[in-house]
Image (cartoon, rainbow, N blue to C red; front, top):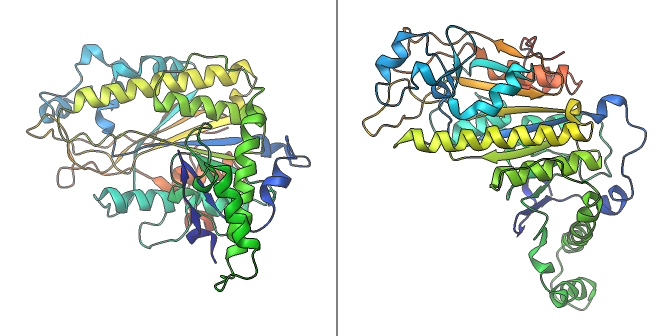
Length: 406
C-alpha cells in the first residue's frame, strides 16, 4: 500500500497519510528534535492564493499606460498605488505589507509562470504543486523534498498542512504529513465516541471474524497513532503565548497556529496554508481588496508574533497562485483566467526588492502576459538557498536560482 494513496479522512480537518511505524509515540517524545544540523531550524511556509490571483492589481504597473487602457473600470488609480518605483507599486489594500517591503523583508518576483500554460484551475494547480508542466506526477515537489532531506522518520510533524485536506504539493512516497485545519476537532471520525474507538479495536483483535484484511491491523495502528497525536499536539503547543493580534479570519487563525507550531519547535520544516478564492470573474475589486487586506494584516501579525519569540529569521514564506488573470477586464468588471503573476518571498533570509522583469503589456500572447521567470527557478532558489537541498531531481531539471535569498 502506497502512502500517496492511503488517506484517512477526519473531523474538522485531519488527514493522515499513513505509515506503519509508531510515528506519533516516538515523535511526541522529542521536542525539540535532537541531533539535527543548524539548517534544520529553518521553516518554509507556503501560502496558496487559491483561484488565480490577479497579479496586475496586486503589483500594479501604474507607470505603463497600457494598464489603464486595458482596465478602465478596475485599474488602481495612480494616486492610490503604494509606489515601489516609477513603474510598479502595491495595491493600497496591502499597506501593512508595504511596510514589510520597505523594511527589506519582502522580495517580489515578477512575471512568474511556465511554458505552454494551462488555464484550468485543476491542471494548473497540479502543475504548480508537482513542478511538472509536461507530465502527471504522483508526488508534490515539497513531498519529494521531504523524502530527499533525510528528516527523522519517526517525526510525523516534519511537515504540516494547515488545511482540511492534504494538498498535492506535500504528497510524498516515504514521508507522512498530517493535515490539521484547527486544533479543535483534530482527530479521526471513529474517535468521536470512546465506544466507537473501542469497538473498532475489539474488531481488529477478534481473530474469529470470518473476513480479515491484511491491512486491517495497519489501519488500526494508524488510527491509534492519530488519536494519540490529537491528544498530545495541543499539549505540545499549549505553552506558546501569542504576541500579536491576528485577524479573526480563517487565514489569521491558520497563521496563528503556524506560529505556535514554529515556536514549539516540533522539528517542522514545511507548513502549508490556502487562502482565497481569488477567482474574480465578476466585480473583482471588492473580493480581491478584501482578500489582499486579510493577507497583509495576517502576515504582518504572523511576523510580529515570530519576532517577539525570536523566530522571524527562521521562517521563509512563499506565496503562489495557479495562474494570474487576463490583462483586459471583462464585461462584468472582473478578469478571466490568465497566465504570469508575481510571487512573494517574505522574511527568513530574504534580500528585499524586485526581481525578474515585469511582463511587457504591449507584447501580449492572445491577451495574456508572457512569463519572464520560470516558477521552477523560484522553487530551486527556495530549495538550494533556504532548505539546503539540491534542486535538480526535485524540480525535474536545472533552473537558475535568483539572488533573492542570502
